[in-house]
Length: 255
Image (cartoon, rainbow, N blue to C red; front, side, top):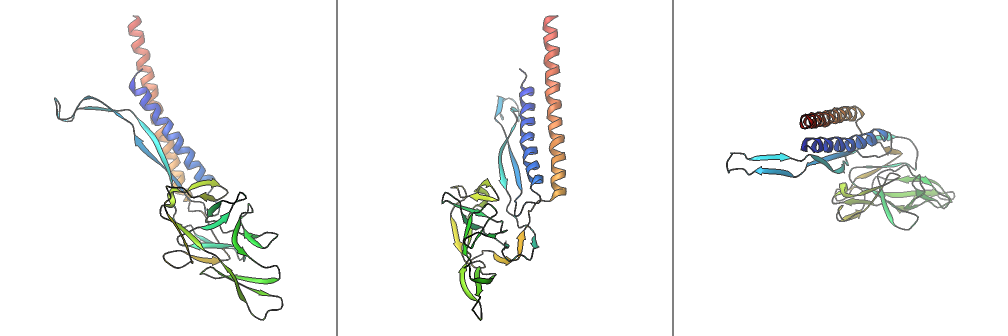
């Protein structure tokens, strides 16, 4: 088999991964706090039929194609949308909300579109609880930029502190594992995590009544998908050319 046939095929497979990734970005353009993911590529091994600095100046090095090496999440800040809903909270800056999954394990999210469950906990749309619980006799609550939660009971004359949000930051957030539902799971690649008061030590502050939108630039993603499609078509032409040359060579052998 001609080497060009395989090399061009690797280009098609790599661009298919790229298109899949861009399509996912576009599909989640309206998902709260969704973060763009980009595809990284690597060239494959080289065939050295003639080493550099021997008989020729640069030698003969033929590449074996390309592969999609990884996808990397880009954690840039999305725009904040004012919803006016008191249970909605956005992080302006670095950090994640920590929630508890049904199996008791922690998960992390930038999506602060919280709701009150039957026990008064602020929780995600999937029912994963945060650390903040609003007592049932409290008629009003306020979430301050530093994460403190203040509320006022029916018989109270003024608000009092009932809890606080903490924000968690990772050394390498791109290493977090996306598990769906706008949630991430900590991994060893994500590095050490630190949890603290919003607004301190570089952590983001909170904005009540706001939600963070996705950081997807739809126009840019549309341009990216067109480029990926063109690259796929060029790789396909390489496969067709190699196949045609192989067919012609076989005909010569038969002749």
